[in-house]
Image (cartoon, rainbow, N blue to C red; front, side, top):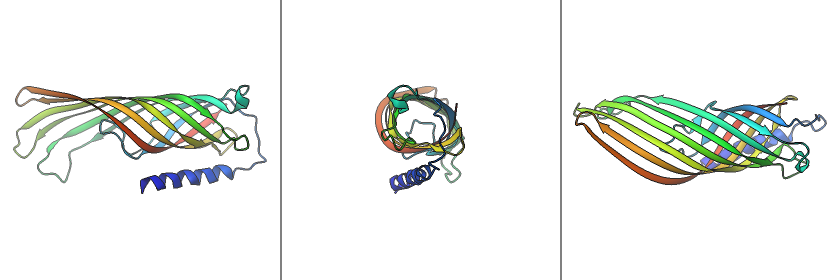
Length: 223
């Protein structure tokens, strides 16, 4: 059910872009900077600090050289940081108490291309991604009241994002840019468990690959 909703949201954005006034033309501007306003990830990784739906968390840059590929291809990059803190589970009487802090740094770099000359607002893109995340918390209590431990999960992920986007010009320099894409990520995760009550430490390393559809909306200014 989630995937059709993503397609419906992107389809609505496409109709909005297609409905732009065709007679209003401005000289193309090669540079764009902006903000990752909101993102939705269908299946966030367990080691990831992101929630499924999260707000502003990154900066975006795009360069489209006007004299190469007829101004239809360019380079893009972004950098983002997110953090969230969650408390104890209120409905669980037997669970330990404590706060969990999750942080994630995400870097992307890639290219975009406008496949249809008559639709300059529609483009496809491919990005290479790197993500570093840390989820950590100190916990006490539990059913026996004797728990006292720290658990830290550190993840490093490499992957790709491939999809399509639409540049919806609201003013001469300002645009809203929705993007629908598919993300493939290979993640290397380390779990560290430190039992302060008994003075013991346990760690494990595991790897996993995940693929998930996602959707984001950018707000950009061109110059």
